[in-house]
Amino acid sequence: LIERHAMGLFAYICLAAALAAAPDKRLRVNRALRTTHSRRQTNRFIFEGRILVNGVPAVSPDSRLNIGDTVEFDGQSIAWEEAELEPHRYLKFNKPEGVVCTTDRRVGQNIIDVLTSCGGIKNISGNSDNDSNAICTNCTNTRRVFPIGRLDAESTGLILLTSNGSIVNPLLRAVVGTKSKKVKEYHVDTDPIATDADIRKLAGGIIITTTARQNGGMASVTAPTLPCLVERVVVEGGNHCSTLRIILEEGRNRQIRRMCSAIGLEVIALHRVGFAGVSLEGCEAPGEWATLTQAEEIAIGARRVPTRNELRSPEEIARRKAKKRAKKNGKQRRR
View 1 (cartoon, rainbow, N blue to C red):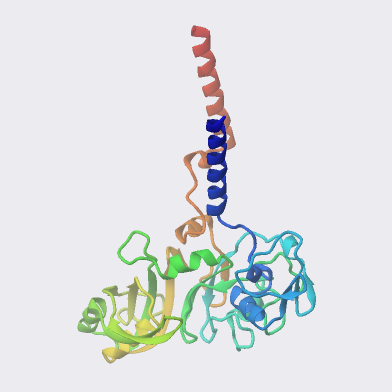
View 2: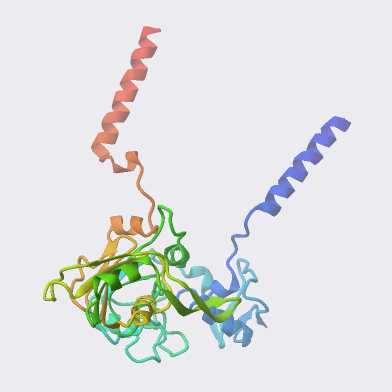
């Protein structure tokens, strides 16, 4: 009897430990407005006391919501349990010169407004007030889309946008020197035209000072750039020897412009043509956009590589199952 009680107690302890170790899957308060606002914006609303949970101001962005909890934002009830979201979105955009890579719609020529005006795309952010950086007031199932990284306003070319925040850090902060590195490819025109000696200097690394986030703030960092590929390239409509092809494995602030400036070259045109295995195919002209293909989603880590069985057609799967059944029946008859 004692042994039975001891076994029961042991099983109870194991169950309690497993439950304690299991991740808490309840929704955080700062995700209650996930269809219309970013977590950073929602965090600010929480600290300003604008979000109420069960009639009481939310205390922490990390607090969890239970089924049946009521959530209000500025006095309006939020149907957070019913906010079924559409699948994540992955877009590429050929950014024209002058477009700013921000979702803040108070900024002129912000990328969200420009994309929306391109036609064929809609509901890429939440509602329409300035606080929300949004587009549609009645899009309860729409995921907000934001750029992955940025291009300077004066730079042009490929910029990726997504609603999936989990892929951003692996793309922007991939480990250099590994197979998972996410390289960026640019076409660059300089004044004066780079000499062979200039190309060797750029490829070997240049000491530059850039700003970077450190300990929650911005700090100046002076360090040499990593070795990179730099070569002359012929581009359509350009001078046969004036354009450089530069492939970077890192992404420091205004890196190429600072590298060129350090050796006396002024960048007069900077055009990104590739990032993490994605090219401008399908959106070759400035202002054009396209949805990423399955292969491109796999390249950026947004989709897993399909298994061999998933690649088979339904007919082939049916044939293989029939063959296994016939083989099994044959073995049984021989017995």
